[in-house]
Image 1 (tube, rainbow, N blue to C red):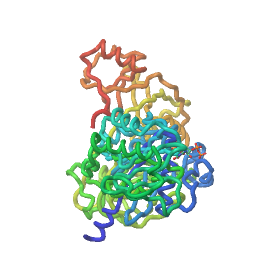
Image 2 (image 1 turned 120 degrees about the vertical axis):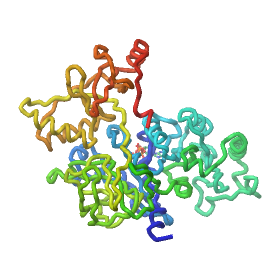
Image 3 (image 1 turned 30 degrees about the vertical axis):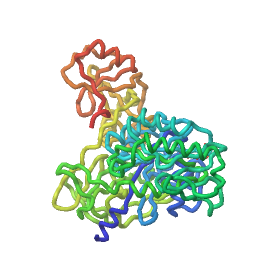
Length: 524
Ligand code: G4P
């Protein structure tokens, strides 16, 4: 195998999906500690300690205390190079959060054992499923009282509609948490014991041989019974089904006490997919092809207000990146020299000279790129498949505060929409501008950028609509439009209805059964 092939095949690129507070930051930090990428616990948590306050990142993000430096983190472990992509949550939830999932080969889903599957996890899970991304689950906080593992497993399969395979199983929980029964390694990993006693190997029947204090605990007996149940009635393990995204491996642990994290990491690396081939206008592109190519999935604007620079995040899909190389931007056919590039680490930015398929790099962007852009080298010019459209759930009516600024207002909106920062709709009858987003932050970024880059103050007024549904047959009676079911054009001139709520949607469907509505996120 060539060195290049070896390098590509060592890449594992994933995002963590979870609901706020499930333990994403804590787990990420532990993973980075294993990889030696950070030395001190607390580095990733800089967002809370204010460590990034002096950095020159986008002002609005500083105000909100979001650390963009942790957007992409990279570390080496046991011959693998691991790239973790952050999926911002809470108030920071945006289309970027979804789009990040187009740039990974797998996802790690963290679930709080007391809470089970929560709203944001479910949203992100659906996007992963839609894209066929394999998911690995880490059920966290076993050091606290939570729901029983059987209950959690049942919920996982029911709510997500996918089969699972517990790679390990907890022995007790909370104050009585004794450790995990590791089915994959046929051993028990004990919680809070001396390092040399931590692992207890199991015999062929999956039990401890000889005398051992664990055998005196009724929890051990109970675990053996549950394991027997899983072996007999549960799903069987299949590495192939895992990599096809049809079977979710489930791990139990406690990120805070760093328990089960290393075992999780090692098993994850064993089964997680290598960089995958991606669809393009000329068919699938092999990541091992030596022609360099990639696509932009995120643009971080205004990192430095003095220079108005932006960073375009590129997922490398094939070949090798070398600093200073000349590439072609497929959308325009124009050559670009990639002189300034950035690699992301937990607490600093550094210049990257080389990177291969699977890696993420940041490209200096003076306004050249749009989200979804493909860049290529080599004779074949192609474009990677269009990034999916995500259904907005928040809408505002937008106007310029100063009517004299109409020209700037239109130009700003046009560019920001094209760049993928926000979605634009126009009401069919009155031609008013509505903006759609999946998270509030998108509106704030929009407002900030309109002011700073286009010198326009905007008014934004919340619209009651929350549910957007596109229309199958475009030939529609415009009189059906009212405040509860507002008829709009999207930016590709496709018609959609914005409904006030679920009730309005159902009512509309009952009244107009001949009108076929769809949610783009249930398709592609
Ligand atoms: P997030 O990034 O997913 O939002 O979650 P984060 O890691 O910040 O964790 C949320 C809270 O849950 C934190 O407590 C964290 O210490 C706690 N936590 C994470 N993993 C575990 C675990 O395995 N066991 C227990 N018991 N707690 C865990 P906090 O009090 O909100 O924050 P902090 O003051 O500790 O930073």
